[in-house]
Picture 1 (cartoon, helix red, strand yellow):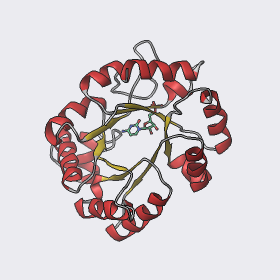
Picture 2 (spheres, rainbow, N blue to C red; picture 1 turned 90 degrees about the vertical axis):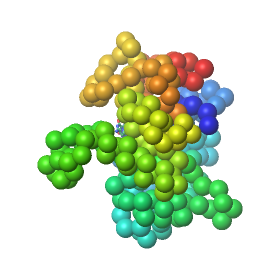
Picture 3 (cartoon, helix red, strand yellow; picture 1 turned 180 degrees about the vertical axis):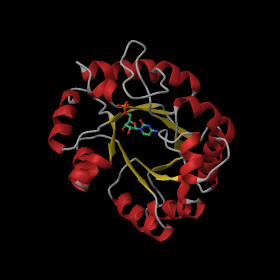
Picture 4 (cartoon, rainbow, N blue to C red; picture 1 turned 30 degrees about the vertical axis):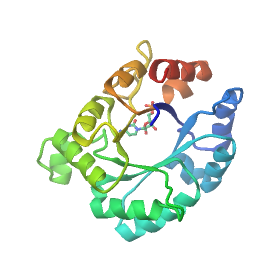
Length: 234
Ligand code: C5P
């Protein structure tokens, strides 16, 4: 499994997305991109097909969470879109995650990488206790959910770069960690609280970093992307 940089295309239209990605057209290897709910709900499956046909690998970040049957059927639709990676909420239970794998697996036995969201980084200990009535330490909950994802047959989790090492220690080094919250040492942190540089994320063993604004809002996005690759992959 090779490390890679995934650019979070947090745009709300195809037009904006293509005008951004056109800047990368001279690159031999098209960037791996993340399509989230905002862009997918705005443009539908057409945006996935178009980006695929332009040669991009795609992480479709829709975070499914529903009854197992619904998730299985939805995953079966998404697998036909030929994305490279997609995800579910581990809170949906091991049965739901197993159903997701079944739905995602194509007739020839292949399937996109499937990862789970453990606890969102917007959830902290207090919110978890008050809103969700979960009283265990958040760290323990995250590792429990990661382990549930592993025993359900998933390939990995989305987690903070600060959790990546512990996830690997708990679930094995082949269990994929996909980590947002990446910033350059000399860059703007913005609204991200717990951040790491691409070089630190590499050192700690992240498999993929998801980078949005440090690339999308850079004066020279291609240079910023290349800097991520140089720090994280090379
Ligand atoms: O712009 P920035 O680099 O902060 O973007 C990070 C991306 O990763 C966004 O698409 C954000 O929604 C996503 N993400 C995150 N934290 C999580 C899960 C996803 O920042 N825990």
